[in-house]
Length: 312
Length: 278
Image 1 (cartoon, each protein chain N blue to C red):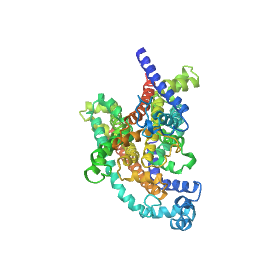
Image 2 (image 1 turned 60 degrees about the horizontal axis):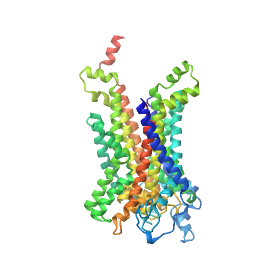
Image 3 (image 1 turned 120 degrees about the vertical axis):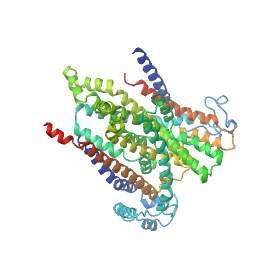
Image 4 (image 1 turned 90 degrees about the horizontal axis):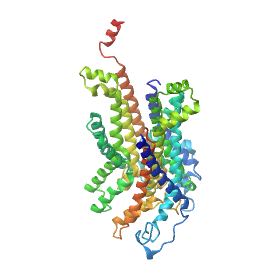
């Protein structure tokens, strides 16, 4: 397979994701039994279904709804929440929740990046791997429950601000960093990538030439490491939904969960689009970095081309 | 060598025992739990064997059996789906169909580019009310997990030599079914395929517990089962809420909930160890 196919697929996927995800959800909204407006305002329970349909743009069919929604979404306008916080702006809900999730994800990456770096340098002993794997077997929901119990017993159920709020965030990051084999995967995955590369002949020649192994191997393993890093970010974003709900962190995951539970398509559309944008951004970064690394690796060092021509 | 074979056999026995236990429990699960019996409330496993009762006097083993009924079939189906797809990817790499290999990798890239739970929640949102069962969610999870499994199986087949490995065995006069099914799948891909399948089985069970727990903690119906049925998450929720409240803690509820989670993890690990490469 040519080297450019994978980056190209990633770039196409990165562009397509934010377009396809809302399209699929919109299609589902119309495929579901019943009128979309009746899902928000069941006729037996509330009046004015037609007025609500007109207000949310549900009366002009799925294509119009999708085009209008996308046009507004690009400008940061997502309409109002249908059920989670009825009438409240979804944009505001998103802006309130994104910083919490971003903080959670960044904190969760600290143990993973540290573990990967230590494994790459060979400073993480292999004999400790079974311990990480054992911890990784514990599901995120169980670890999150233990952490939530600690916070609630010490600070009460409604302790969401100040130090208890920060503690919830730190515990959440710890859970995401270690549960579901996240840390074990980071350590073992990074180490195995480097170990495979260190077996290559050019690395052994680099050792004979007195060069550092890491500087020689790093450009070649970077695409694999970036791929692993993206996979871990996705894993953390996925787990964030559970951790945020159990630990009571008002982030994007909790918002998506509430939207799904209450069939609030306005919130789900916006939250899923946010996740799609994030995933697309990561794909784009991975694809571009792969292209740049490939160009760097393929570029002959100064003098090599001339020497090769002379030898020929 | 013989010691390894014995160890693999022992792990297989452990895994099979737990799996059979799950299947039997799911088949014998009562359609509805017993009506509340407040005289027995909070009784432990010694007073009300085998698992004790909850704060309404309902036997916990009925929750456990209903929970097994919710997860067993979808988890098995999801595990087998991943195993089938991983086997397919490994065989394709060995058969040398490069364009299919590229197409599989591209589809895998697209499928794996969104956080899995986000996709699962969107799917749960789309499910009609009559479809509130774990199977579609489990299968969707399996499809999202499949690219990793397929990639690993294909890489293992690639390391084996891919097309050249098959050619070499053909030169020895082996038939195609023997080469692909015995030499490639059984002898070389088995460890990867079984591990990936067992992991997905475990993940689907944990996913059900997580989704049901989050729903029950909000007093909302779960996406994974109908309202009259209880998941293993109920045991965890009862144990957790009683721990935090002034009521008598339902330690046995939390204990058996955690035990069931541990048993599923042990089953997955046992399958992995039983199928590990020589």
